[in-house]
Image (cartoon, rainbow, N blue to C red; front, side, top):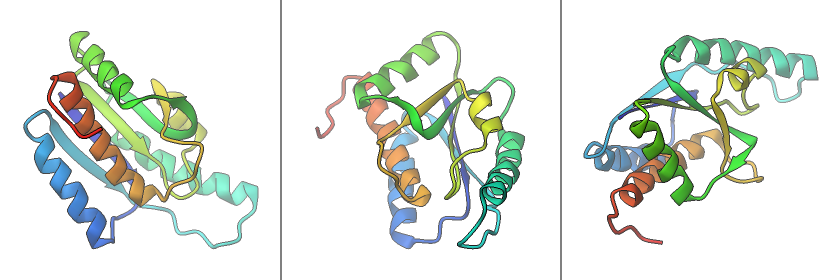
Length: 159
């Protein structure tokens, strides 16, 4: 399975990079993982709703340019469905079984994802009703993908 994580912005924090590198290394036994960073849009602290939509639209265009036609797209969105780790595992197994081996997870910028990206997504997934820094979500997502593969193969994993 080819897993692509498309995310907005560069990862600056060393501790997050180290965690992602560790899980990426572990995942290499289960899938091919690619992380694609698209540039974030510079935005002031205070913005109007129209300005926020414009930032999301521009970031969304960059995200959409990275999505391949045959990819199954899972967008991380606070309004999305909440899955357990077991459900994520089952969904990835089901995709593989049906020949959908190209999966893209999308993490938006600090303002979230544009409507165009959400419309392109095959499913919207929420990790919580809480708001997390999009940089931290990268680490959480990679860990959950690793956990999903371990669960799917019946291998032990800390609960």
